[in-house]
Image (cartoon, rainbow, N blue to C red; front, side):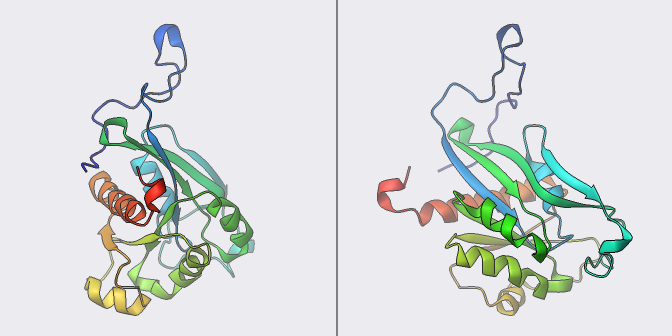
Amino acid sequence: MDFAPSSSTAVLPGDGPAGAPAYLPPTDPILMKLMVTGPFGVGKTTFVRTLSEIPTLHTEETMTAAGAPVDDISHTPGKTATTVAVDFGRLTLSDGEFVLYLFGTPGQRRFLPLWEDLARGALGALILVDTRRLADAFDAMDLIEEAGLPYTVAVNRFPDTPPIALDAIRAALDLDPATPLVECDAREYGGCVDALITLTEHVLDRLPPENAP
């Protein structure tokens, strides 16, 4: 199955006849709720913003000195805001056959109840990781595994990230051999699409036969 992004231009509110709202093409697409999660400062907001074909929803607040003891920005010194609820975007694949709704989570453990709420109804998750602090990814991985969701791990390659082989990363994260592990740059569209396609295929492979498209 070809999971290429839709070749058509994204349809936005007001693009229909006489300005009528037209949110999706007139097809019967398969709708999939997917989570984009991972530790604080790993690039989740950037990932959703890079991929979304619609104006994205972000609930960010300016970081303050009060959060300095618990929010480590040593690896992202330019970070001035953090997600406190959700990042939301949408991507259409296979010329409208699949519509992916992307829900980006906050990265801090104090938002765990919100993570659990966002996981309800999700079919799978993309977990972004930073090789400079792989241990920070275990909270997100534990949550997704407890929710019983299939997931793909995507290594977000920051400019100063040292090169580490994927096999070494897989071993450090103790990933199941069946769990996909990919690389991307959250700022670059092509690699982000490939990561999301890998997740979509992984989710579809694990759907019960009666629910498979």
